Length: 42
Image (tube, rainbow, N blue to C red; front, side):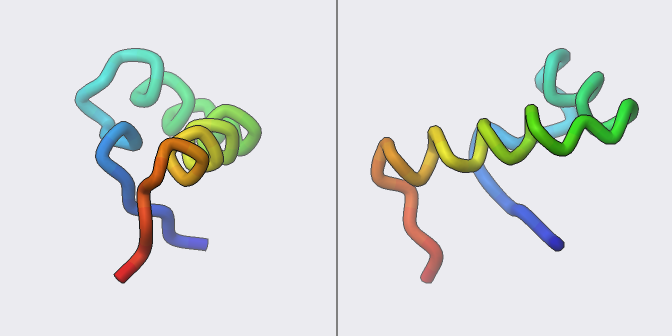
């Protein structure tokens, strides 16, 4: 799965940690939060 999002960015410390640790739940929740806030895939 490839997820691209404004707040899913390896420069953001908690996101970097989640990526390094392969924390799927953290990344999934971040993506859901963005979608609920109005982010859309075009």
